[in-house]
Image 1: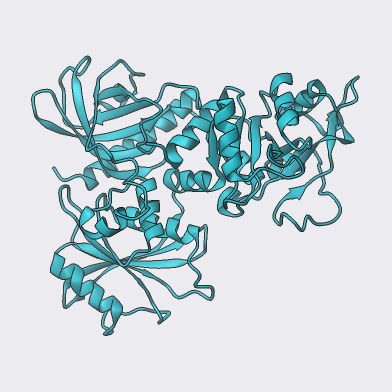
Image 2 (image 1 turned 30 degrees about the horizontal axis):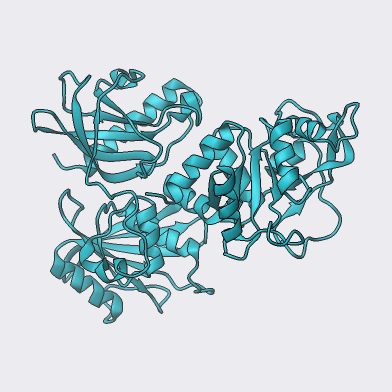
Length: 481
């Protein structure tokens, strides 16, 4: 099933291999762009950008790299594209004029070289660096931010070449999203949107900061109160939970927006009524959005709500009062929405539950990197196809073994970025916590219950093993024996 995760993963593989990809904007009418890795820029890839692009070859760069190379901002403001900060243009010092595909490819590779120095470039030149904002697409939905985010996720140098895609229908205009997707199919290129990159980051990263947690006695029994603050939107949320998440249960989660800046459970109102419904159901939470000066619900707000539900520890909640866009975001980041509350929504134009079209991942165990032995656990390694849309990350779950028994497992899905960046085989590694048998060649069913964190590139093998040990501890706390 195609979706943000598979589109981004496809783009990561292509960029890592030096192939161009097509990036569409965050609206149907937004300009589309062609991207390619700067550190792997070749005469062919840059000639392709010039042939089908606007002719202006840009280099999306992190601010720290712009500062290191002493690339000051251009004079004036870009009023048509607020947030895009272009620096002075550059050429690599050399015998050429700088304008050929050969020369521009060399300039881009030098910009992507961490050892390069300011005096290796002449100014002005024929490559235009663009300084991305520190928060990437979660701060500003721009092509430079999406390009830098993609290269960062890919484990490559963050600098990325890009150019606006010229419309084939009207050579005086830039292609929109629909035409860009047609172009990508015609040339056999991967295509993704800026919103896909933002969704992938919300899936793979944690952006909800816990501000407080305590338990309060109420007429409904003990209620756990947890306050969150989003480092993306700055918005604050409170989750009032009854009961503890357990495997096989369907918690009821209700969403409310408060009018009082300090909600109190003793008040009679929507929040108390929602909590009473959760108590009657027996298990779940009420997620309250604290009052903000700007109460407009944005795509990032839907990401906030999805993260809060995930942080509550719910894998397959039944949702009440959540906007449709929030439900879609939850599907994208790996939550399975209970059909009881979302049936009418599924019958509309919404996508099917993304990442959970199959109840389990079934595969044959292959040899891995033996890291599980350093933790003292048996590890089952299953190779995954790129088309498998389950979200990369670390999960708490369980494995059904060949004899019908079940073992709790800390499960890692991805390409093992600490050792292989984005070029490794996509693998599911299940560390079975209470199993001591032989797994090689066995067929397993792997069930994912709780998403715990995204894939991270660690500086050393020792740091990775320490993180896996922490994952094991959290897995035991999330999965009941």
